Image (cartoon, rainbow, N blue to C red; front, side):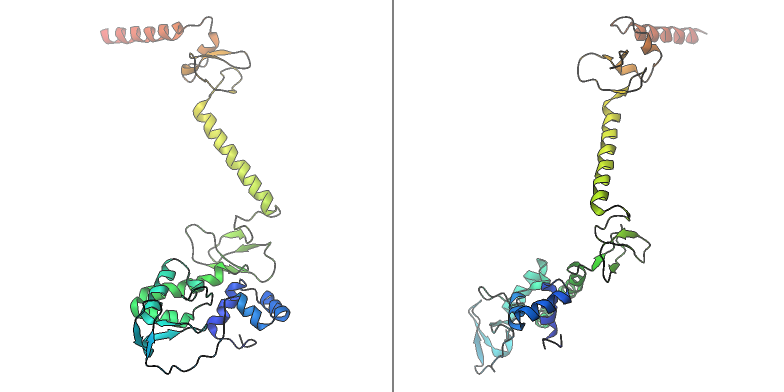
Length: 282
């Protein structure tokens, strides 16, 4: 950023800290000044002295290494390249690529991404590429004016808006969605109203599924009736008794109950058996 005369990685650290909101960043700069602005974001700018010694003692592994095998960060802390590399690899694999801080105790300064990329690529080029992808994705995930398209399967596109986040946008893949809540387009409903309506529809759908499995319709008024234990003779609130297990097979017959018995179904079964015997004798 030319206004602050910072390196690229320091500028990125500032933007990530302020979620890519340039207006907010400039406001803090005016109100608090450059030093406090950078300190809050973990950005430190120090003048490094030329190393005189040819050997450096790494306070992580406690080994002496040549000066050209050690690296100094913006905060002034220096460690061997091997320890730096291990530190970077661990942080990248933990998903902390956006803000890899110095290894020194209680130091919150962000490491130079160029140094991270250089050391990691020498050990694992694929992981260095992963680091670059994470940095790119940070622009989308940390920026309130940019959002991934919620398409399923994901189309890989991102949408950027200029001003109002209360709007509906259309992705190049053809999906139209609400930028604020990432749900399907729902104007003129507010996001809260749409969320409540969606939950209501989901709850009603689950209720219908439960009733389909656990209840049967009364043969007279067709209201759902649940049998919770006991025998199969149940009574609807309309007063109609019916045989619960056979309601689907004989709606009309179930309206003719005269006693607590399964005789009508037994006699019906016996009649069918008799008919089958007669047919076999022909």
